[in-house]
Length: 218
Length: 342
Image (cartoon, rainbow over all chains, first blue to last red; front, side):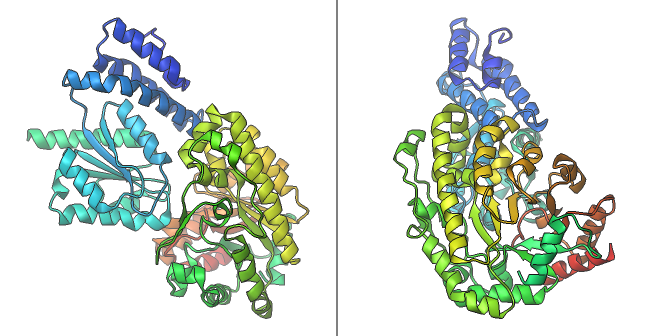
């Protein structure tokens, strides 16, 4: 459907204007929004992710591809809502309290959205109570916590504990990531998963979403 | 650093082989205040706590080179404050600086700060001037001018996402921004050297460099870092604990002769990429091993790091990055012992 349309290539080279133009052309050709995502956006972001992991593209290139994806979703989101298309899972993301860094979180948000997840981005310096409030409103399946500062790592634990104290820890899978975060740390604080980078976080979210679906169907 | 440590550092940088490998760490507010029993804000605002904590470190671990040593800093706020960034202070958390640029075009209105008068810079200098007699009495001297790097400052002024994106969308303006941050850094380092004639080294910390391609490093990193490192000092120390495969081969050409890097790369890889022209400060895992591991874990990590190394010249054993919060005394002692044993 999207093959040969130029959409994937536009995303890969981070050309937001071309990506939007190609998306509009596909819609004009009656390609369904959900197919534009699954056949255009998702494989393109997977290529970008692979290039990043191989050291063939870097953070600025990744951000440009993410920006193109974001612009595409501005067009597709209302159309998806009209068709009641279901996302793979709903994800709430935020950088924890005391930390203003957003680069990792933004990359994860774009990669997740490109991967078919519905993302609610709470921004930076997010206190535990905002995560809880967002969870109660959105009923997300996954909550992603980001931190860049070593000093804000304890704030991740505080969020997880707040979910426990609110009695909703079982409702949601919590994944953590960011430069100072390690698998060992994630295990220590009781997170359900650790995303080593933005690309790995998408795979992780896919696995956690799978666990959630298994739990729902059992 | 005392004279002996400084001379050891110079010997290592010259490529001389020492009978025992040296150990060294970058220490600052992520580790030092809590290790010394102070709240972060007390450490940053009380000269007595600052002096006491730094003296405790150098006296507890006399074998270790602490670099820069007696680093007068205010977390990530030091340099951004000079550009007018609002600094936010918590009782026991690191201060952070709010961004001052909300779009790339706002670079046009950015003024080059005066390090003698602007932001927290006079405070940083005055603190050291007030304490210098006691630092000297303890046998140490101020050896390094220290600053965050030009890309790092730019990312604080704009926001990291916005800065990294603008490197692609607004290249001319980003060149302008980096020129301003670099001009400022040249002034700031010159002023530190003027205030402390014992300075014969520069420590520049810039993790942003690790996130860009070699091509972007050639355009937005090397020219600016090269200008700063062209200062007439003996030790040109660069810290980047983000991945640095792309920039590593170019670091010798911009003058770097001492590098603290992260855990993404091995010492052998880094030696190869830099042509063994740079002294490496690294690189056992800082958080999982040095902070969260046992002394036995630390000893194992040191052994595993050193064993495959045939050429141990130009090496100072450390962790991959600055000393992280929570590193206990016994783990530093374990590293020192493991270095001697291996």
